[in-house]
Structures are given as C-alpha cells and as structure tokens.
Length: 313
Image (cartoon, rainbow, N blue to C red; front, side, top):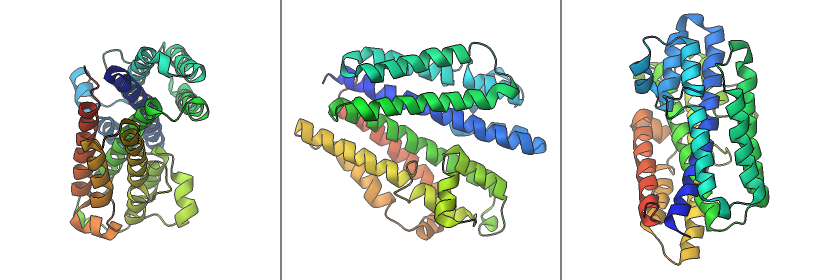
C-alpha cells in the first residue's frame, strides 16, 4: 500500500474518532452547565482545554458563554478542530483512499458528512443540542459498524484502527488529567470526599458510566475511576485497551510487511513500561506526571508510525 493511502486511512479514522470524542465532551459540559450555573464558565473552559481548543477560542472570544463555546466546537469554520471541520477532513481522506474502502464503509462516511452538514448548517439551539449530539454519536456508530462488518482485515483496516485507538487513548488521557486537576487542585485532597456529580460526568464523557457501576457498584472514588480508565483492559476506552489494540494492529502490519518497525517496539514499551503498574503505584508517582508521560509517548508513537510507513511521500 502506498504511504499516502495508508496515511489517508489513518487520519480518516483519527478525525472520525475526534468528532465523536468532541461531541461527548460537549455533552459532558452541557450536563454540568445545566446543574451548576455558578461554575458553568469553568466547566466550559475545561472542555475546551481537554479538546485542545482553548487557545484558539480565546483568540476570538472574551468569555466562556455556553452558546459561544458550543458553536465554536460544533461548527465554527474558523476552528479547524470543530466537529464540522474534522468530519469534512475525515470524508476528504476517505475519498483519497476510496479504492481501499468497501462500498458500505464509504457510504457510511459520506452519509455522516452530509447528515452533519445539514444538522450544523445553522447555530444549534440549546433545546436541540442533546438530539444533535446524539445524532453525531449515532453517525459515528454507523461508520464503525460498516467497518467492522464489511472491511477485510488487511493493512488498510489496520492503519484505520491504529488511527482510531491512538486518538481515543489521547482523548481519554486528556479528559482524566484535566478533570482530575479541576476537582483536586491540591494533593492534600486526594482520598477525601469529592464531588460525585463531577466524577460521574468524567465517566459519561467516555461512555463508561454504566460499565463502571457494573464493575464497582455505587462507590465513586478517584482511585477507582483512574484504575478503570487507565488499566481496565475490558473497558474499550481505557488506555490499556487502546494500547493492546494498537499493538495488535502494529503486529499485523509487521507480519504483513515482514518487518518489525520502531513503532512496534515503541507500542510494546508503552504497554509494558507504563501500563503494567498497579494504580496505587501510579498515584504514588503522580497521576498528572503519569498522564503527561503517556501523552508524550502516544504522540511520539504517532509520529513514528508516520515515519515507518512513509505517510508523506
């Protein structure tokens, strides 16, 4: 496969995952804003920080009014990370790699782009926001279903999955880091009573609320939530799950091309060196420091994949 085609599939998957992640972040911010009007501005800022869009937002706006934040993240053409922008880039990359996609996969992506273009043609009213966000998540699910049900498990599929799980791991880590430090601004607060509504919002923003309660019951604690989102390998948005899947896809690519690349070794190092410790040891070393190191390693892996497989030729 040409590096350009591999890169298009990889970035197509990253942008598709990013659009859903941003929709979940907006939903989490919206829930808090409805129940905590006195802290709504801080919550919306945390959403922008998590999505990596705070600096760009502050260049254009003076305050964190909910309508302005939502419009910026959903549809602002000046924001290259808005959902409308990234779904267009996902579709453009899919078109570049069209011959490597099944008809069903291409139609799901193209339909998603057209559907969201219609939904986001005008500013979204607050009353309509939950339905719009649900539609964005639904479109993402339809694309995933088309991929899972029709794509050959070949190199194109593996490049797409690499993009999905690299993006997902980055998002989960950022959510946990930003929310943790908003809720626990001092290490003195670790282990004390915390705001359960805020922590449950973290779980909702990664589609893990019900799964967490299946596993841990009604107990809400920073330690258990961090363990669930970092180390629990059966949770499809945990760091450990994402890393396992990335390693699987890198392994398939290594076998397909008959070469163990540096990216394969880096992926194994992330799992073996960073995600093999118990959660208590991670907290002892500092959760923020752990996540910062993970994000740096994940970004380095992404760059190495682009080099190893020559995405830019």
